[in-house]
Length: 229
Ligand code: CA
Image (spheres, protein in one colour):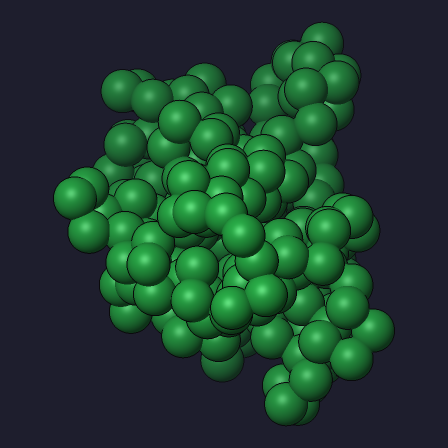
């Protein structure tokens, strides 16, 4: 059964949405506060999130951005103001759909179903094979040596690709710069481990939403790097 999270501070609206979605066979949870909603969205497995824009503690802009930095869960953003919806679109936060309140509950249900179906098709096509690595928003095709970040293809140099792939194939393991240098550059290279730092920086620029707060390749100070699963 698909599980949906509604982050909405207006209780009457949240309850109405919940009733209709439950009637359609979905399991629904409600959070009224933005920060709590974000925490649950990141730590639990929801199939879709309905996100209000104006919320106590943390607004929908920030929540959407934070979720997208880590997860591909479909997000439908809702707001009472048409202007806000235009603004959200303009910001390119990565929401999948936008609705202006008030909307009919049946329209909401229809859109929820459409997005769930689309998302299932999307992940269905990326069936894990040995040649495809998919971790959150990143997809690496080892055979074609191509990389997509949130559906957008990015270009990597040979060594950047090798380093990213090596880390992604060994998630949650910490490697020292020496180990990485040895693994990727072998003996062929004259150079030093600073090369690793430079390449990590370049990879981050391509895959991270915010390079100051990496969501994929973490720096373990004094040790090396780790690809976070
Ligand atoms: Ca609100």
